[in-house]
Image (cartoon, rainbow, N blue to C red; front, side, top):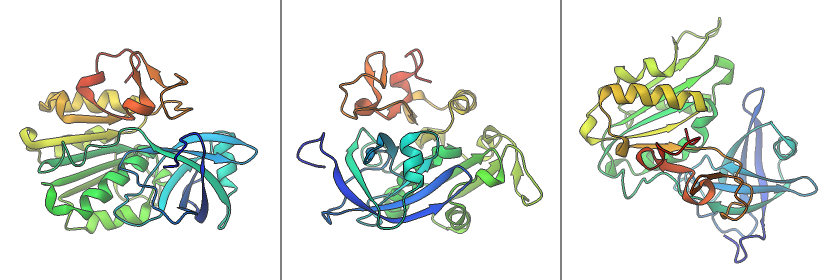
Amino acid sequence: MAEDMYVPLQATTLRSEEMTETERFFEFKLDSGEPLGHEPGQFAEVSIPGIGEAPISISSSSTRSDTFEMVVRNVGNVSNGMHQLSKGDKIGIRGPFGKGFPVEEDMKGKDLLFICGGIGLVPVRSAIQHVLDNRSDYGSISILFGAKSPSERLFVDELAEWKEDDKIDCFMETVDKGDESWAGNVGLITTCIPKVDHDISNTKVIICGPPVMYKFVLIELEKLGFSHDDIFVSLERRMKCGVGLCGHCQINGYYVCQDGPVFKYSDIEDEKGAI
């Protein structure tokens, strides 16, 4: 991070690739040559000269490379500006910011169940890569991923690798609605949860997806008896400043940019508007 947290560091675009009709994949490297120094689940503020700045989740683990990866949905001025980036183009980076997934303090030695919906896979992928790169530190690993349709699946090649990876004990994928190209499971991601062989007393659950998914996934986990202390959710809000000053991301007494974006569910379950 820069000495002045308000001053962006310059980074160079190494890769810019179309992922779906609305999402684009990027790989960046700081021009200083230093790693970004991020933890799984953190985000950074990305600025495009002449356009503006936006918070973007970091989708790669620092265990993989000195570069960092992001996936951006084209929904606004900054994201549209990023979608125009080509190899060699410059961006500004502030961060990393926020509290990520507790892969060291809470998850080591535990079985892990990752439940991701749609673009929710983007920040969770950084935690999945981290635990796979430190596989002996964790118990069983289960990954559930759901997308609305086959054309909206992210990291398609990596999903295929996870399906065959013997480091992963259970991998299930589903789409809400299939098409002629899809031979896999069709149905909501909640239908996959009871099919995983859980040791509830030793499992930590990581959830990230669209708001409506949280509600029904949490209901399903409660049916199975999971403690709210063992569930971690990654929340998305308008984290404008990234340092807890502007209040755009505030949920009652919490600033998502500083206290999150990853929260233990038991800490925020009673906060109106959090889930």
